[in-house]
Length: 116
Image (cartoon, rainbow, N blue to C red; front, side, top):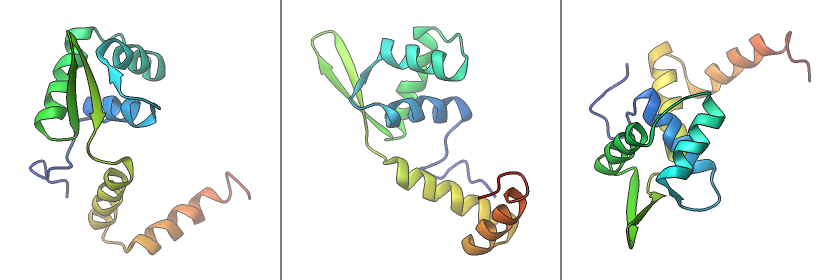
């Protein structure tokens, strides 16, 4: 079951913000996060909304906020790979499967739709 007190627990909106940051090839500033999230996920988020999500992610120690004059950039502390591992573990625990069994079942379901 998902443990909302776990340090890796994120809301859906926080996950989208983190994914945009993880996919970037440099540390992002607020306007870049807003632009990337709105474009990639069809959102119409305003800077204040994204700023709130970024603040939560800094508090949860997913991000580091660096100041350069009046501009703040955001650098990921938690690696995407570590977050993926957390999500996979939650998934397999929820379904009572081993990771290998979960992959096998997913592959069995996908093969008819996506032949190799």
